[in-house]
Length: 234
Ligand SMILES: Nc1ncnc2c1ncn2[C@@H]1O[C@H](COP(=O)(O)OP(=O)(O)OP(=O)(O)O)[C@@H](O)[C@H]1O
Image (cartoon, rainbow, N blue to C red; front, side, top):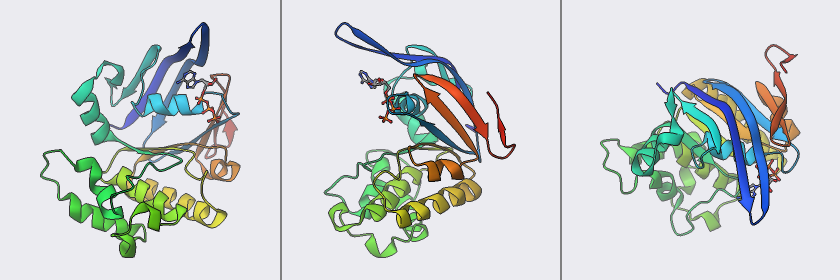
């Protein structure tokens, strides 16, 4: 069970020519299953950088990201890809659906090229039904609304039943009705699948629905608020 996600003393710096940017500085955080965390902060504060490290898409310059006790920075190549596939679902602001694949194919695509005994076609059908997209299974992304594309992206992220769902600005391209539907979906996923949800957002309404908010400024955690206890923790 990959039930704990932790960042321990995580730093991330980028070097562009002579300029070094310290995007994250000494971040220590722990995330739990069945918890919806929103990461907030001004533009450039390090939110997306943190999410990409937690999602194993990038490696810290210093410190560790551990998932279920595994230091994911030590994983490479196929082992890293397999670990990510088994543990993490990712949703991006622009969804990144493959334009020539139908909704059904996009949802199944993480399994393409993998040997598996999982009946992923049945699971994709189930997810599309669950997300209200049964009648859009054969549509291409260009034939879908923004909210529908987002739900396809979520179904794709959930196809392998990840313990962690990570989303970067998921409501950035949605109208208020679809954004509202998205909040409800997150609550449902948390309760029914028991996954931990971590969302980077500028959307204060979405952040207000989270169990916990973490605010970054200049690459550091400046405030952590747990809604269930109501307290500002640091
Ligand atoms: N690949 C990169 N190369 C160089 N600098 C980068 C790179 N990615 C991010 N940065 C810098 O790191 C800092 C943090 O960026 P990041 O994208 O994490 O911020 P953010 O809080 O997600 O911002 P936004 O809300 O605008 O998306 C910024 O100063 C940014 O310019």
